[in-house]
Length: 124
Picture 1 (tube, rainbow, N blue to C red):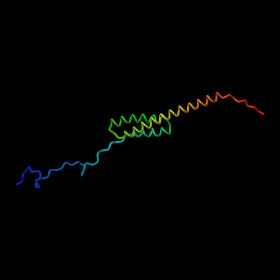
Picture 2: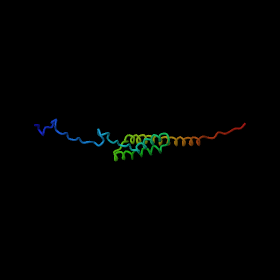
Picture 3: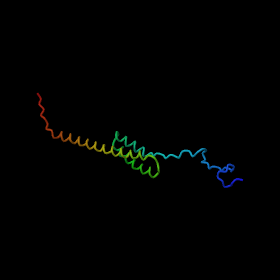
Picture 4: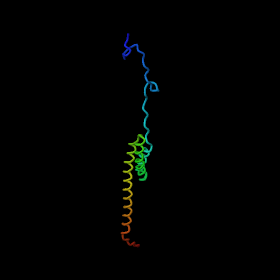
């Protein structure tokens, strides 16, 4: 006679194992999607370096919005958003410095041109 409470009874009927619904295993966990605005932020910031400062500024602002969306929606792309913010603000700053230097150069040329005394032209 066997013990009915023995967990190692070889003749005891096996209990069915719970299934996952997909056969032999649980499969892969669902992946989180990448935030599209984070990618747009990085692309605009990089294009803004070469095109114009307004794109860099737009990229930095999109990056700030994307970081909030990534955190609220539990999405991927925080690195893209941070890269967009950093590159965007640096490029915007460089464009501002470049425009200021260009304006100073033009003003300097105008002041220099006005301060020159005209030389008399002699015709022989």
